[in-house]
Length: 335
Image (cartoon, rainbow, N blue to C red; front, side, top):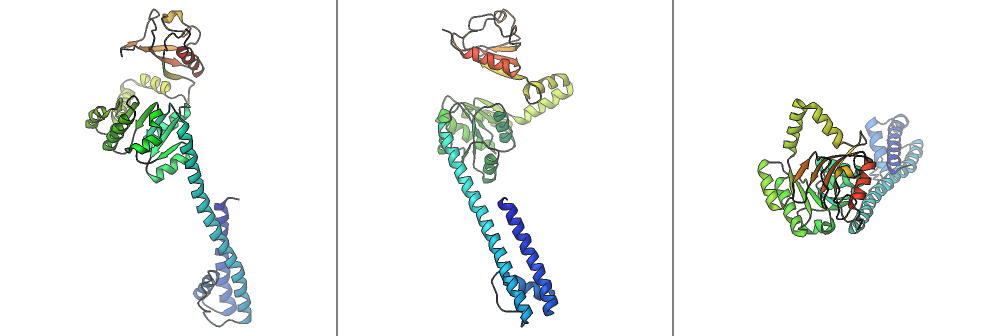
């Protein structure tokens, strides 16, 4: 039986004793209900100022029964409640220590600053895809949510260097800043860029004017949820079929299909080959939507004669199993 259930039963027992005591004094001693209630409460709480009135022998025996049953029940409720508080706090302390030790060993992870609606959504999506991450949050109620959801927590203010260092920013693959205000996001980006000049930083901008400030502060990319949301609404109105396709491609929960980017390592199996000469379409049944060249050029809908070069990034679409094979072959050096 859990502590919470035991505590509920204890309070029910106390309530029953109070009702029995109130009616007992009324019928045995002729007291009013208020006097019976008052006498019962001061008895089971061991306050015991004095009897409301003189008691008969029957009333004294009844009072002894109230004392033994009531004090025992109150003590049980007190002990159970105290254990709940102490064990709950101790459990959180131990959990946070385990998280901090685990974070010390984690690498190539993402740091998610802020666990509001957007931060929570991002974390659940990364968790679904098996991508490691650490959450940085300074609000107590949100920290509890992170722990309840089973994610790694690095408590503290994301604008402070020590907090980001504890989150492993120097070993991190990227950082996402979705804290409450644009000003805080700018400070987070500045701090993160200073601690790790090569890290990928994605920041949310609430206001249009904040986008330039975030980019100047060092953000790799700035996302405006309102602009994206507005564009999705427009696409849903004027191009519903396109919107449906994009939703299928982005949401892997309903369909076993993924839209991924895979970087081609030097001297990999695909390096220097034409698309038509690889197994990407023929055997893996994957669609190459675009190829991003090392200089930043984007080749959309590449033809069969398109040559895959070292450090190209393939934007591919298909089932997860084939995508895993593509990624393995693309990053394996065959030299």
